[in-house]
Image (tube, rainbow, N blue to C red):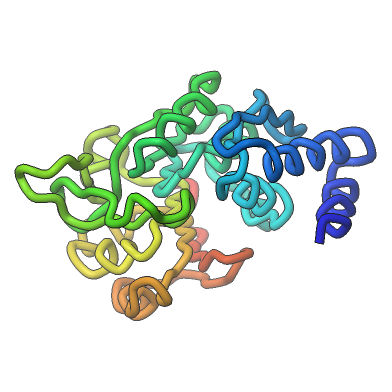
Length: 255
């Protein structure tokens, strides 16, 4: 497995950058848990940091090697929303590739958000929010604090429980004074079922590209909720890595 990962890093980044990335990846697999490892990625304008012996090295490997965000079509340089931003790796990649875009990175879990804030601070075009995406404006909390750092799930919080703000897609559009998103990326560990089940008529026609990782194994019905939400709409549908990708018609993109 390690030899295959090394080969993949070398193939994508070349001898020295690929080896340096692999060393950082391996260090993050063997150093004491929680130790921060600096990673210099040629694709990124600034270094990022990952936590040893957590899910962070796996997130890094997937982000760099699965190439989920190597789109076969151009993205409009508008507003991108990264819901479920984890430690900010995808947000940093998007902000580097699209310096004229504004990236709104949303993360629910406190420790993930703290590292995301550090990783995205050098990027003036990233807004980091300690919040969640939901079907209505409310507050939510992490369901299981002991879950892996890439698998935290949200649930509604009561008035007396700690939680973070949860917003709808249309609330974000209003808050940031934009009519349409260039990219809406959703990777929220099953909460997409909630997002796509209620209130979608207010925003389902207001993005150019939607990328969603569906988690039916965690929350049965996620795929069905997406299918109902887009029923009757004109989208080009494809897959990239673990994401389902919906692209609006060419007449809308860039408008």
